[in-house]
Image (cartoon, rainbow, N blue to C red; front, side, top):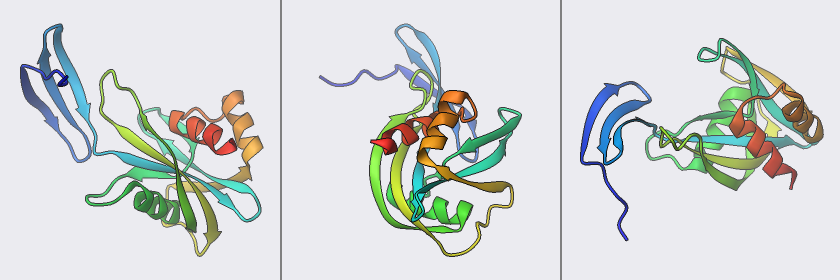
Length: 165
């Protein structure tokens, strides 16, 4: 059976990363955020530490603690994106990258898909992201930060829980 399609689509916003379409469906109008896709990586060092980044998120008006992540570049695979973001944000190189899962962040209004990865990481330099602070901690401690409320980012929480297994 074919997936249903909207009867009409109108582009309401065309930004650098996201676009917003207004779609007409039998149940009414829906605003759909179109996203190019993203990657995120749980990177584990030889010492068994997880690499997290603390950064200010304008939408939340606060700092968050997250795994390295970013938007897919054109023609880039999720694994390539994960390795690139890890290096840019932390100065660590991915030795081996394995898929953990693919998630949709909020399918009620966006098609944003994030590919989650697990990687072994070795330091080769310093991260180039000026607004990012590198935080290292054992995986068990990172999981406690999720349940304790210090890590609020959904992709990070999901990926850390998957990495534990």
